[in-house]
Length: 311
Ligand SMILES: Cc1cc2nc3c(=O)[nH]c(=O)nc-3n(C[C@H](O)[C@H](O)[C@H](O)COP(=O)(O)OP(=O)(O)OC[C@H]3O[C@@H](n4cnc5c(N)ncnc54)[C@H](O)[C@@H]3O)c2cc1C
Image (cartoon, rainbow, N blue to C red; front, side, top):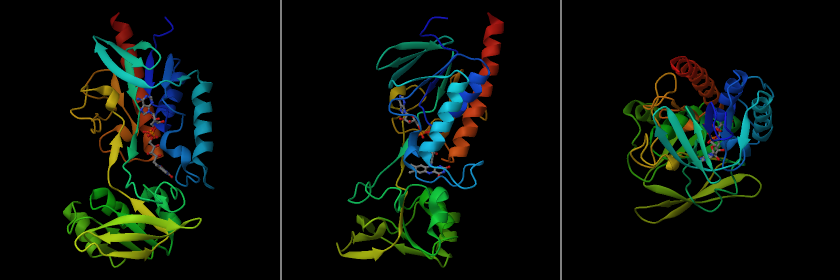
């Protein structure tokens, strides 16, 4: 097999990719992961992951990444630090173009993840992991009896906000409009929850504190009045941007689309799988990303066996 031909090409080096590579490597398939920055993806900056099975005392994102990477490499997966710029399909072959070369493979696993959309206000970047979060399921339990602000009005904001009410004293939902876009069932649940308070027609202008978040400045868009709201947590749910730009219009009608798959994680194109946060209806959790990576890897192995039998 030539140097640039692989059984499996995995795009992205986050948890979904590393999990897939453990399975494909262990099945003795020649596997390469392309990662444009460093392995680990979104979890790398998290100081405490408290919901990944096997780590009852929690583990930092950096340590978990190191273990996952070691595991994938142990079974022979190669990691190349190259950015994928394009993907083309020619019959059964997929051609991947990176910033350093071209590679062929019958199987592609798309695991390039997504990035939470940011508010872009002062204090947001400074306090990530110190009060600012983009995941209620991950970080909600750290806010027992605290005041928390949730930004957004869609399904994610409301369902994650409701989850946080199990722990927080109060959840203030700050929304730029006077009505929510979340499904009615979630809206009804939020309106009848005594721990939920709505701050309508308003945006966050600044997140402030010393070592940790201590409050936010809120601006009312109708009268431009500003007020300070003391809080210890700010959860931001204003969208999620999948890393699909390199696909052009392959599988995507626009640049912001999440990829649809079947239950084997296979996309509309035979031999191309999508796993983790890039996937439509993803639960955006480490354990689901890792699980989907494993499913795609096993389905891909079966597909490769079929392809080899046809030759
Ligand atoms: C701050 C934070 C804390 C979190 N805490 C938790 C937690 O405690 N528990 C939990 O279960 N979940 C947590 N999550 C969610 C979890 O991190 C994600 O669900 C998970 O990382 C998704 O994995 P993924 O592999 O699909 O994608 P990602 O983690 O997004 O990884 C994708 C990788 O692909 C690379 N990439 C993108 N485009 C290209 C390209 N063109 N070429 C090459 N490489 C590319 C990126 O650089 C990145 O490394 C947290 C998320 C954040 C942001």
